[in-house]
Image (cartoon, rainbow over all chains, first blue to last red; front, side):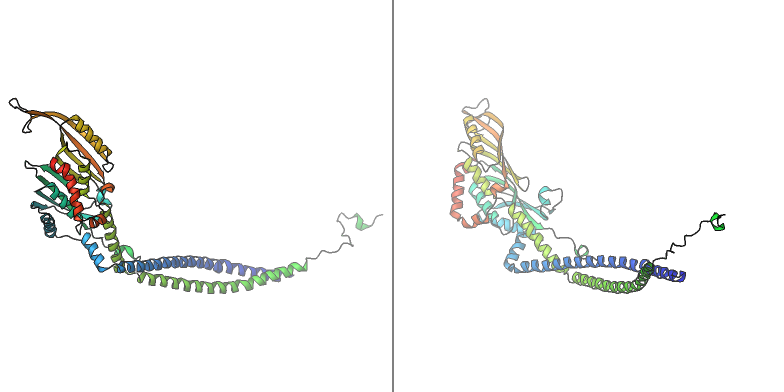
Length: 194
Length: 232
């Protein structure tokens, strides 16, 4: 074997190795990165599609709720309340049980805060209505029963009773109505930007 | 005389020994390796290049599919769903914590003896799950107080009952605390009672409210009146 032939072979091997090191290896690494990105895109795309599909399914469930039920739900926990209407309803409930409300006061809205143990479980605002009246025991029970079946929640938060000279009950009662606290804007948090 | 060549200190090659030649096979192996690598390297480069193009194309397609999926996400629908879900959850919690105060009166009245009278009654909802009632009670004898405490303790729907500030007082016929010029006197026992109710025990059930006719409610209140109405 001639010296020239040996050098030629070594040169060819060197060229091949150089191609491998300078082009093939970095390109393969680059392809690896691209494949990883593609896998991530595919995975995220699958997740987003699942979310879209789930959203469609859930919306179909929401849409399957009858308008009457939605109306009842909205009435039970409205977004806002008209304090005058609620006071009118409370007085009407008492009047239906033959009881006159002596006075009734609406307290400002108390929005739920994280420190409030009760409110932390539910994102609602409270509206207190304090009233006083005089009635008999049977009338009191009747009023309480009527309040329980109201179309929206009027929770008896406090109830003070005292008996007067003629056996009538002097009642100081606080009723709490609830409204839903609206959710803050979610549009900026939901869709990622790619 | 020995031959001149044998006297030389230079070792002589054995004429029988054959010259070792480099194996011809190694030349071929080296050639095969070098040519193979030289041909394979460009071929591999082309393959890698094509594969890279294909990968980039796939990646772009995947990215486009992802963007398309993201674009198809309907934010107003999502907001609508969240709002409905929030309202439903909040309503569920409120419904679960909805207690029947009327049933509280029913429970206490059924457990209260005729000899015990309520002077004041102060109900406070201290939390979502607890109702506390503080009341001033009056009875005529210690036996009545002991009996009453046993009755309340036996009532399983009352979570806890506590009697405090038990006082024996002499009063005149009008019920006022005895003075020096009072004629008729009697002794009464006053005490403070604290009742604790758990919301689960007195939960409002819509079914019973709709099923139970008014007459039944009146019966309940009539039963209650046997003790509380006259007592308070």
